[in-house]
Length: 316
Image (cartoon, rainbow, N blue to C red):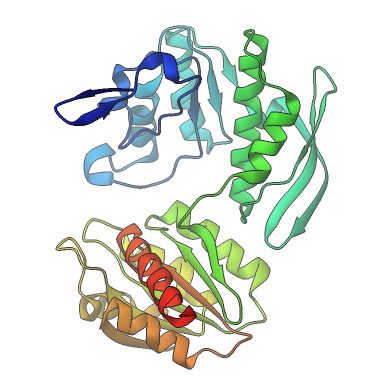
Protein backbone atom coordinates (compact mmCIF):
# COMPACT_ATOMS: atom_id res chain seq x y z
CA UNK A 1 0.00 0.00 0.00
CA UNK A 2 1.35 3.42 -0.97
CA UNK A 3 0.61 6.74 0.71
CA UNK A 4 0.13 10.21 -0.70
CA UNK A 5 -0.35 13.31 1.45
CA UNK A 6 -0.85 11.05 4.45
CA UNK A 7 -3.73 9.08 2.89
CA UNK A 8 -3.41 5.38 1.96
CA UNK A 9 -3.77 4.46 -1.71
CA UNK A 10 -4.79 0.91 -2.53
CA UNK A 11 -2.85 -0.28 -5.58
CA UNK A 12 -5.01 -1.99 -8.23
CA UNK A 13 -2.89 -5.17 -8.16
CA UNK A 14 -3.95 -5.78 -4.54
CA UNK A 15 -7.62 -6.19 -5.46
CA UNK A 16 -8.88 -9.39 -7.08
CA UNK A 17 -12.50 -8.27 -7.32
CA UNK A 18 -14.15 -4.98 -6.43
CA UNK A 19 -17.91 -4.57 -6.19
CA UNK A 20 -19.09 -0.97 -6.58
CA UNK A 21 -22.58 0.13 -5.61
CA UNK A 22 -23.94 3.01 -7.65
CA UNK A 23 -24.69 6.00 -5.44
CA UNK A 24 -27.59 7.70 -7.21
CA UNK A 25 -29.27 6.61 -10.41
CA UNK A 26 -26.57 5.47 -12.79
CA UNK A 27 -26.25 7.67 -15.85
CA UNK A 28 -24.49 10.53 -14.07
CA UNK A 29 -23.07 8.61 -11.10
CA UNK A 30 -19.34 8.81 -10.32
CA UNK A 31 -19.05 5.01 -10.65
CA UNK A 32 -19.58 5.41 -14.39
CA UNK A 33 -15.83 6.00 -14.82
CA UNK A 34 -15.36 2.25 -14.27
CA UNK A 35 -15.12 -0.43 -16.95
CA UNK A 36 -16.91 -3.38 -15.30
CA UNK A 37 -16.82 -7.08 -16.07
CA UNK A 38 -20.54 -7.31 -15.38
CA UNK A 39 -23.31 -4.92 -14.33
CA UNK A 40 -26.23 -5.84 -12.07
CA UNK A 41 -29.53 -4.01 -11.81
CA UNK A 42 -31.66 -5.03 -8.84
CA UNK A 43 -35.40 -4.42 -8.62
CA UNK A 44 -36.25 -0.80 -9.40
CA UNK A 45 -38.81 1.24 -7.50
CA UNK A 46 -39.50 4.90 -6.76
CA UNK A 47 -36.69 6.80 -5.00
CA UNK A 48 -34.90 10.13 -5.45
CA UNK A 49 -37.65 11.25 -7.84
CA UNK A 50 -36.43 14.86 -7.79
CA UNK A 51 -33.20 13.68 -9.44
CA UNK A 52 -34.18 10.57 -11.37
CA UNK A 53 -37.69 11.30 -12.65
CA UNK A 54 -41.28 10.93 -11.56
CA UNK A 55 -42.15 7.75 -13.45
CA UNK A 56 -40.67 4.28 -13.29
CA UNK A 57 -39.71 4.54 -16.97
CA UNK A 58 -37.70 7.71 -16.30
CA UNK A 59 -36.01 6.15 -13.26
CA UNK A 60 -35.24 2.98 -15.25
CA UNK A 61 -33.62 5.05 -17.99
CA UNK A 62 -31.32 6.65 -15.40
CA UNK A 63 -30.47 3.27 -13.87
CA UNK A 64 -29.74 1.84 -17.32
CA UNK A 65 -27.02 4.46 -17.59
CA UNK A 66 -24.59 2.03 -15.94
CA UNK A 67 -24.70 -0.26 -18.99
CA UNK A 68 -21.53 -0.37 -21.09
CA UNK A 69 -21.01 -1.48 -24.70
CA UNK A 70 -20.95 -5.28 -24.81
CA UNK A 71 -20.76 -5.74 -21.02
CA UNK A 72 -23.18 -8.42 -19.73
CA UNK A 73 -26.08 -7.35 -17.55
CA UNK A 74 -27.66 -9.37 -14.73
CA UNK A 75 -31.21 -8.05 -14.57
CA UNK A 76 -33.39 -8.83 -11.57
CA UNK A 77 -37.12 -9.40 -12.07
CA UNK A 78 -38.75 -6.05 -12.89
CA UNK A 79 -42.13 -4.52 -13.56
CA UNK A 80 -42.92 -4.75 -17.31
CA UNK A 81 -42.39 -1.04 -18.05
CA UNK A 82 -39.01 -1.09 -16.29
CA UNK A 83 -37.85 -4.26 -18.01
CA UNK A 84 -38.82 -2.83 -21.40
CA UNK A 85 -36.68 0.30 -20.92
CA UNK A 86 -33.63 -1.56 -19.66
CA UNK A 87 -33.73 -4.33 -22.26
CA UNK A 88 -34.07 -1.74 -25.02
CA UNK A 89 -30.95 0.05 -23.75
CA UNK A 90 -29.11 -3.26 -23.43
CA UNK A 91 -29.99 -4.13 -27.04
CA UNK A 92 -28.69 -0.76 -28.25
CA UNK A 93 -25.36 -1.41 -26.50
CA UNK A 94 -25.19 -5.12 -27.46
CA UNK A 95 -25.18 -6.14 -23.80
CA UNK A 96 -26.00 -9.81 -23.16
CA UNK A 97 -28.83 -9.95 -20.60
CA UNK A 98 -29.02 -12.64 -17.92
CA UNK A 99 -32.31 -12.74 -16.04
CA UNK A 100 -32.05 -14.97 -12.94
CA UNK A 101 -35.80 -15.56 -12.95
CA UNK A 102 -35.40 -17.27 -16.33
CA UNK A 103 -32.03 -19.04 -16.04
CA UNK A 104 -32.71 -20.61 -12.61
CA UNK A 105 -35.45 -22.85 -11.27
CA UNK A 106 -36.14 -22.70 -7.53
CA UNK A 107 -36.97 -25.92 -5.68
CA UNK A 108 -37.64 -26.97 -2.06
CA UNK A 109 -38.10 -23.42 -0.82
CA UNK A 110 -38.48 -22.95 2.93
CA UNK A 111 -38.20 -20.16 5.50
CA UNK A 112 -35.98 -20.29 8.59
CA UNK A 113 -35.76 -17.35 11.01
CA UNK A 114 -37.10 -15.06 8.31
CA UNK A 115 -34.52 -16.16 5.73
CA UNK A 116 -35.56 -17.93 2.53
CA UNK A 117 -33.54 -21.01 1.63
CA UNK A 118 -33.90 -23.24 -1.44
CA UNK A 119 -32.21 -25.38 -4.04
CA UNK A 120 -31.44 -23.31 -7.12
CA UNK A 121 -31.13 -25.26 -10.35
CA UNK A 122 -29.50 -23.74 -13.44
CA UNK A 123 -31.89 -24.65 -16.24
CA UNK A 124 -29.32 -25.11 -19.05
CA UNK A 125 -26.67 -27.07 -17.15
CA UNK A 126 -28.70 -28.74 -14.40
CA UNK A 127 -26.13 -27.53 -11.87
CA UNK A 128 -27.58 -27.24 -8.36
CA UNK A 129 -26.75 -24.61 -5.74
CA UNK A 130 -28.01 -24.87 -2.16
CA UNK A 131 -28.76 -21.25 -1.34
CA UNK A 132 -29.19 -20.36 2.33
CA UNK A 133 -28.75 -16.60 2.87
CA UNK A 134 -27.87 -15.44 6.36
CA UNK A 135 -29.84 -12.26 5.66
CA UNK A 136 -33.60 -12.31 6.40
CA UNK A 137 -36.23 -11.20 3.92
CA UNK A 138 -37.46 -12.66 0.64
CA UNK A 139 -35.75 -9.87 -1.30
CA UNK A 140 -32.39 -11.12 -0.02
CA UNK A 141 -33.03 -14.46 -1.70
CA UNK A 142 -33.62 -12.58 -4.96
CA UNK A 143 -30.37 -10.71 -4.38
CA UNK A 144 -28.67 -14.08 -3.85
CA UNK A 145 -29.94 -15.25 -7.25
CA UNK A 146 -28.41 -12.13 -8.83
CA UNK A 147 -25.13 -13.02 -7.12
CA UNK A 148 -25.15 -16.60 -8.39
CA UNK A 149 -25.89 -15.38 -11.93
CA UNK A 150 -23.01 -12.88 -11.84
CA UNK A 151 -20.58 -15.42 -10.37
CA UNK A 152 -21.55 -18.05 -12.96
CA UNK A 153 -20.89 -15.50 -15.70
CA UNK A 154 -17.43 -14.78 -14.29
CA UNK A 155 -16.76 -18.52 -14.08
CA UNK A 156 -17.59 -18.82 -17.78
CA UNK A 157 -15.06 -16.06 -18.47
CA UNK A 158 -12.28 -18.09 -16.84
CA UNK A 159 -12.25 -16.60 -13.33
CA UNK A 160 -11.44 -19.12 -10.62
CA UNK A 161 -14.53 -18.96 -8.43
CA UNK A 162 -15.60 -22.25 -6.90
CA UNK A 163 -19.24 -23.22 -6.48
CA UNK A 164 -18.55 -23.66 -2.78
CA UNK A 165 -17.25 -20.10 -2.56
CA UNK A 166 -20.49 -18.82 -4.11
CA UNK A 167 -22.78 -20.60 -1.64
CA UNK A 168 -20.49 -19.87 1.35
CA UNK A 169 -20.32 -16.20 0.45
CA UNK A 170 -24.11 -15.94 0.37
CA UNK A 171 -24.43 -17.86 3.64
CA UNK A 172 -21.89 -15.68 5.48
CA UNK A 173 -22.83 -12.24 4.19
CA UNK A 174 -23.53 -9.61 6.86
CA UNK A 175 -25.36 -6.38 6.01
CA UNK A 176 -25.60 -3.89 8.90
CA UNK A 177 -28.82 -1.93 8.98
CA UNK A 178 -30.75 -4.18 6.61
CA UNK A 179 -33.21 -6.22 8.67
CA UNK A 180 -30.32 -6.52 11.10
CA UNK A 181 -31.22 -8.19 14.39
CA UNK A 182 -29.48 -6.55 17.34
CA UNK A 183 -30.86 -8.70 20.17
CA UNK A 184 -33.65 -10.96 21.41
CA UNK A 185 -36.17 -10.60 24.26
CA UNK A 186 -37.37 -8.24 22.95
CA UNK A 187 -36.25 -8.66 19.37
CA UNK A 188 -34.74 -5.45 17.98
CA UNK A 189 -34.36 -4.99 14.23
CA UNK A 190 -32.77 -2.21 12.22
CA UNK A 191 -33.71 -1.45 8.64
CA UNK A 192 -32.93 1.76 6.78
CA UNK A 193 -36.00 1.45 4.54
CA UNK A 194 -36.57 4.99 3.26
CA UNK A 195 -38.44 4.39 -0.01
CA UNK A 196 -41.61 2.50 -0.96
CA UNK A 197 -39.75 -0.48 -2.44
CA UNK A 198 -37.75 -1.12 0.72
CA UNK A 199 -40.79 -0.43 2.91
CA UNK A 200 -42.75 -3.12 1.04
CA UNK A 201 -40.04 -5.65 1.86
CA UNK A 202 -40.06 -4.72 5.56
CA UNK A 203 -43.88 -4.85 5.56
CA UNK A 204 -43.76 -8.33 4.02
CA UNK A 205 -41.25 -9.42 6.68
CA UNK A 206 -43.50 -8.06 9.44
CA UNK A 207 -46.56 -9.76 7.97
CA UNK A 208 -44.71 -13.04 7.49
CA UNK A 209 -42.91 -13.30 10.83
CA UNK A 210 -44.51 -10.89 13.31
CA UNK A 211 -48.24 -10.92 12.59
CA UNK A 212 -49.01 -12.49 15.98
CA UNK A 213 -46.64 -10.27 18.01
CA UNK A 214 -46.77 -6.72 19.28
CA UNK A 215 -44.40 -4.54 17.28
CA UNK A 216 -43.12 -1.11 18.31
CA UNK A 217 -41.89 0.98 15.38
CA UNK A 218 -39.39 3.81 15.89
CA UNK A 219 -39.71 5.92 12.76
CA UNK A 220 -37.91 8.92 11.27
CA UNK A 221 -37.50 10.31 7.75
CA UNK A 222 -35.58 12.86 5.73
CA UNK A 223 -37.22 15.74 3.87
CA UNK A 224 -36.97 14.30 0.35
CA UNK A 225 -38.63 10.96 1.12
CA UNK A 226 -42.12 9.62 0.36
CA UNK A 227 -43.23 9.68 4.00
CA UNK A 228 -46.96 9.17 3.48
CA UNK A 229 -46.51 6.19 1.14
CA UNK A 230 -43.87 4.52 3.33
CA UNK A 231 -46.01 5.05 6.43
CA UNK A 232 -49.02 3.59 4.67
CA UNK A 233 -47.06 0.44 3.94
CA UNK A 234 -45.45 -0.03 7.37
CA UNK A 235 -47.74 1.36 10.06
CA UNK A 236 -50.70 -1.03 9.57
CA UNK A 237 -48.43 -3.91 10.66
CA UNK A 238 -47.39 -2.44 14.03
CA UNK A 239 -49.10 -1.76 17.35
CA UNK A 240 -47.49 1.61 18.06
CA UNK A 241 -45.36 4.11 16.16
CA UNK A 242 -42.84 6.35 17.91
CA UNK A 243 -42.02 9.37 15.77
CA UNK A 244 -38.52 10.74 16.26
CA UNK A 245 -35.66 12.37 14.32
CA UNK A 246 -31.95 11.65 13.80
CA UNK A 247 -29.28 14.29 14.36
CA UNK A 248 -29.18 15.80 10.88
CA UNK A 249 -30.56 19.04 9.46
CA UNK A 250 -32.18 17.01 6.64
CA UNK A 251 -34.57 15.25 9.03
CA UNK A 252 -38.28 15.98 9.21
CA UNK A 253 -39.15 16.88 12.80
CA UNK A 254 -40.97 14.26 14.85
CA UNK A 255 -43.96 16.59 15.24
CA UNK A 256 -44.18 17.14 11.47
CA UNK A 257 -44.02 13.39 10.85
CA UNK A 258 -46.88 12.83 13.26
CA UNK A 259 -48.92 15.47 11.48
CA UNK A 260 -48.25 14.03 8.03
CA UNK A 261 -48.35 10.30 8.75
CA UNK A 262 -49.96 9.80 12.15
CA UNK A 263 -53.29 8.85 10.57
CA UNK A 264 -51.72 5.61 9.33
CA UNK A 265 -50.91 4.47 12.90
CA UNK A 266 -53.26 2.75 15.34
CA UNK A 267 -51.38 4.45 18.19
CA UNK A 268 -48.43 6.82 18.10
CA UNK A 269 -46.27 9.00 20.33
CA UNK A 270 -43.83 11.81 19.55
CA UNK A 271 -40.36 11.72 21.12
CA UNK A 272 -38.00 14.05 19.20
CA UNK A 273 -34.77 12.73 20.75
CA UNK A 274 -33.90 9.43 19.04
CA UNK A 275 -32.08 7.91 22.01
CA UNK A 276 -34.99 8.77 24.33
CA UNK A 277 -37.39 7.22 21.83
CA UNK A 278 -35.32 4.04 21.88
CA UNK A 279 -35.27 3.93 25.69
CA UNK A 280 -39.04 4.50 25.74
CA UNK A 281 -39.61 1.51 23.44
CA UNK A 282 -37.28 -0.67 25.51
CA UNK A 283 -39.06 0.27 28.72
CA UNK A 284 -42.52 -0.42 27.27
CA UNK A 285 -41.84 -3.55 25.20
CA UNK A 286 -42.40 -6.96 26.76
CA UNK A 287 -39.82 -9.69 26.16
CA UNK A 288 -42.09 -11.34 23.57
CA UNK A 289 -42.54 -8.06 21.65
CA UNK A 290 -40.38 -6.66 18.86
CA UNK A 291 -38.91 -3.23 18.18
CA UNK A 292 -38.23 -2.08 14.62
CA UNK A 293 -36.13 1.00 13.88
CA UNK A 294 -36.63 2.24 10.34
CA UNK A 295 -37.35 5.05 7.87
CA UNK A 296 -33.87 6.56 7.71
CA UNK A 297 -30.32 5.28 7.42
CA UNK A 298 -29.29 8.25 9.59
CA UNK A 299 -31.61 7.01 12.36
CA UNK A 300 -30.42 3.43 11.95
CA UNK A 301 -26.76 4.43 12.14
CA UNK A 302 -27.30 6.67 15.17
CA UNK A 303 -29.28 4.11 17.19
CA UNK A 304 -27.06 1.22 16.15
CA UNK A 305 -24.10 3.06 17.68
CA UNK A 306 -26.17 4.01 20.74
CA UNK A 307 -27.24 0.38 21.27
CA UNK A 308 -23.64 -0.84 21.05
CA UNK A 309 -22.44 1.79 23.53
CA UNK A 310 -25.38 1.07 25.84
CA UNK A 311 -24.72 -2.66 25.73
CA UNK A 312 -21.04 -2.20 26.54
CA UNK A 313 -21.84 0.04 29.52
CA UNK A 314 -24.42 -2.43 30.88
CA UNK A 315 -21.94 -5.31 30.49
CA UNK A 316 -19.40 -3.70 32.84
